[in-house]
Image (cartoon, rainbow, N blue to C red; front, top):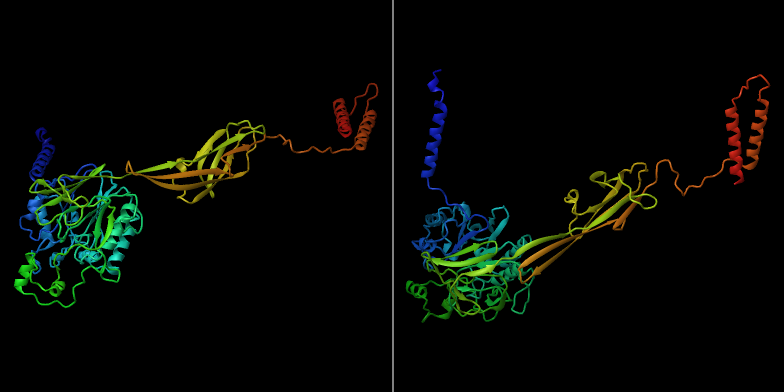
Length: 569
């Protein structure tokens, strides 16, 4: 091969790589979502006309917005106009014109009454077809932990009342029990909670459920209840048709009039009756008049039969709103949208229109305009563990510490930890115990055995019971918004907090054993006499050699004398 052709293949590869890089740079990239623990969420509702309004509302919103939800009544300007030509994917497409990073899995339509004929698409969350209540999105932090939940209340499960609404609210409470209290819960529903016009009869059940989520206390339904808020629950709704200002911000602890259930005997007698089942025919003139907001000259019985009764003074029961919330038609037909930002320490609510921040509405407690952003401090959660321990020492009979001992900690027949040295500590913080520690209210029993004795000492054959128990305490600091879960482990060995394992030396009879003589006085004397007689007979004559060594004779005499001495003692 010619020398000048050797570098062609690497050169060709480099050129192709540069062309590929250039082509990638020429393609518009999807905007990255918020980095770290900053999350931008956008919510809107009640446009009744999608032409131009979505673009105006979303103008200026952060391009790293990670989730968008339309909370109902996106199309249809009147009772007869349901705009059946619209599809949910088309509404998503209008959102993507302003926020191209929003995909179907980061978008939802929470169904309202005017969305009844919007054709649904399988890849767009529509609150389970508009009928069910469920978690529709879980936001995630950069480290993989949950940042927030978005929970949608179905249109019928807010409006129907009775068991339809109460069972759904109970299911929500059950779900809340499994959620860490520091994770904000954003609850969406087209229908509000405040007393309206008898078409949100489930509000009384959901108000109690949301208060439970915020406080952990059952049955908070009236202004006399007192409970400590320990979780951020942000309720966003629309569909406000009260006679007052259609936009309200109700801060935590506000008191509001909540719609009661008129579907059963528990309803307030002053609440307007439900419309009759048979609907009278309505003329075009009457519909136009009602759409304009005028009820002049309209018979009351006919008004009660309308699918959308005229506005009435709100009636219901007074209920303290413990959850942190923005409620009561916060996005009413003004080409605006609400930006909710979740950061490490704060949750911020802002409303925008045409790229400019506008008033959120009226403070539901003071009836004063909310002209700036609403900042809600987040709750923090700390886990604290108090570890317990026991002390072990290998000692001699005088309780002096001996080095060189080794002990094993056993779960049944499995050795899970080894400890060496004359003294040591077993703590619940030991890594070997981490996966075995009991849950609060339970105990764990392990066995301690000596596996190697100190040099020159007998190994202890005793087994010792190590019992670990756990208790849990939940405390909440209202000033710092800090929720602390403390688990305390207590350890006992043989029901003590300190164990001394005694040892004896090899070949040494323990002091507690008594030595018993094997011969009495008469036996010893006879033995000595026999030895003396035998020795005399064995003494050699002059010139002869004795058949018995003198050393053996002397040793035999010594043994006899020792036996005599023991007997006398």
